[in-house]
Image 1 (cartoon, rainbow, N blue to C red):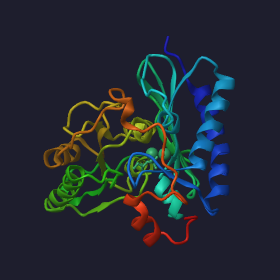
Image 2: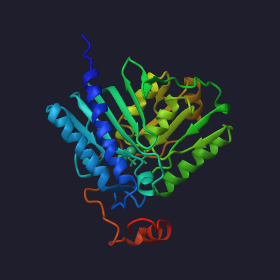
Image 3: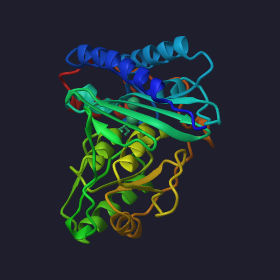
Length: 309
Ligand SMILES: O=P(O)(O)OC(CO)CO
Ligand SMILES: [Mg+2]
Ligand SMILES: [Mg+2]
């Protein structure tokens, strides 16, 4: 007998709605911003607050369930996916957008059992779009069924990717040469919304034809990967092979043909797996604000005068 996790999904939706009100309340306010892995990898008190709110609500209802949460991992928790029921949480996907008030931020919640995603929820907060999918039961946005575009011809594709937070030469040159080679195919265009979860939900809802990236974490893409496949799309590794949730490499597309076309031109840069090297994220993020580090002071002071710093 296959377990039906529908009740769990409903609970996830109800806490995502609560969490959205916290995000909305904080959106216009001044934010205390800290750094994680790079001068462009930001976190705020709201990220941490929303994650705590979600995890404590789930713990109360399902005391035996496990968690992989972005900010818990940043604080030292180990992101290992076991066969136990596990909630994979990104409390704010699009923190840079959130900090700048660029109005696309999402709460991403996935639920996996036996390492298989059973449901995914992506709440695009400012748009008030609640995307969800349950394995084998389709994908929806605000209760409207979703279907990918089905596009086969890559030369007509609108492709979404992210710029990411890596700022080393190898990552940046791979990132820009990938975009260059895609544009040279040619394709219709490249977009980056600033939240991988929403990017992939755009593929699920046919606003875009494909998404690819190297360097996202499982909490960025777990929920939306299921939403894409339940909407009739395909989800692959960047090589075109089988998707691996912990590998940080993904192509989500309207069709196998478009996915293959992207896999042919896109290269991966080395990227530590989520389950292999938990020390990737430092335990003690540097608080900027008054304590500006020299490597980010120009960026911070010169570019974002409206913020707390
Ligand atoms: O804002 P977050 O959760 O760090 O995620 C980003 C990763 O670059 C966008 O998906
Ligand atoms: Mg994220
Ligand atoms: Mg996040």
